[in-house]
Amino acid sequence: MLERVFRLSEHGTRPGTEVRAGMVTFLTMGYILFVNPQILAQAGMPAGDVLLATALASALATLVMGFYANYPFALAPGMGLNAYFTFGVVLGLGVAYPIALAAVFVEGVLFLALTFSGGRTAIIRAIPVSLKTATMCGIGLFLAIIGLKNGGLVVAHPETLVTLGDVRSPTVMLLLFGLLLMGALLARAVPGALLIGILGVTGCAWGLGITPLPSGFVALPALPRETLFALDFSDLGKGTFLTVVLAFLFVDFFDTAGTLIGVGRLGGFLDDQGRLPRADRAFAADALGTIAGSVLGTSTVTSYIESATGIEEGGRTGLTAVVVALLFIGALFFTPLIIAVPAVATAPALVIVGAFMMKGARDVPWERHDEAIPAFLTIVAMPLTYSIAAGIALGIVSYVGLKVLAGRARAVHGVMYGLAVLLMLYYGFIAA
Image (cartoon, rainbow, N blue to C red; front, side, top):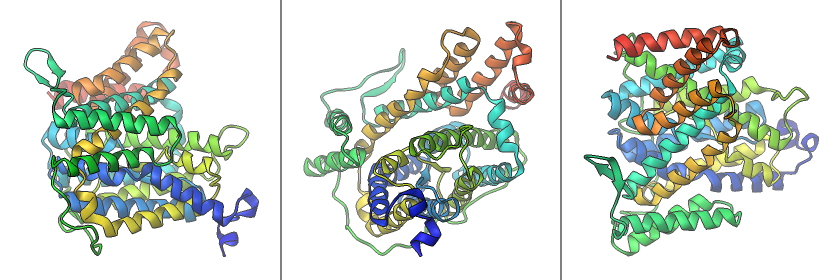
């Protein structure tokens, strides 16, 4: 049956290899089970519900990827997208989380429509590479500053905006310990380095009495209580709602595209023209996961670059993804233990994931000013404005403006002109 469904021999792999690859992938990305509930809890969502939604949405999307697309790619709520959900939309714009979940749902539906209509290819070609990579870098810095803030190393200051926190406090010491531990494990190529680091910092926090011990360790899983079907579409026609949807769609779209191409190249899945066969099926898994996640109660689901670790272990088919999905379902039985993990334990992981996302900076043509300046503005605006959407908008508008003033107006795709005009109208009139 496995041979018939996943065509193992055709891909030069065996069931044992696929199972091992799935376990490695899960260990590498399992930190999302700890991090996502803590980030979305700051938006007023029950952490227990978010944990259940995270595990279920991840499992569902990854199963679709495994059975429908037959790729060893795993999916889960995206880092950066969850931060934008909480800090950019709910806290930044004052939007209630049910409305934000509705925006995620609409974004997932649009993503699915673009996937099967051919619009996906047109948009990918329209957005310049410099802005695509800059968006990921900016999200990385955004995650890093959130992690440093949660760990107490960066604190607010009335005159300089931010400053160094109390490095002698137990929280900051745990943050620094976690950064060193995770960094050392990564340098030694230990599978599950971030997960091991989170567990190590959590053990120290419990042992030192900094945070309370868990109320239990094992519990029977259940569906989310407050976030299930909590979507509120009352703001559907408002400008703010549409802007949020577009920001979710933009980041999710290019995050997924970049991840699929990156891990696809690593696994040797790309064709002679650098395209991923069955890409529409892989994108559909992402879109369906996002739709299901919004209904369950979590932010946008996307493909994870950590899937590369499983590919390096030999994973070549959807069986690897199925193993990851089953492990996500198994994690549901340890909800009390996961919820008790303190924020300081996940803060180092946010910083390190931010560092991972900075790798794309090397792909920006820094010697070309009309490309480099918009990319730089995109990168720095996200952490400094605490808004992914603001960074994207500033990057698009400045890119179009510089190209026109530099006499290279024909080099700009028509879609970019349309986006620039819409963003200027929004920030000039609606958001004012």
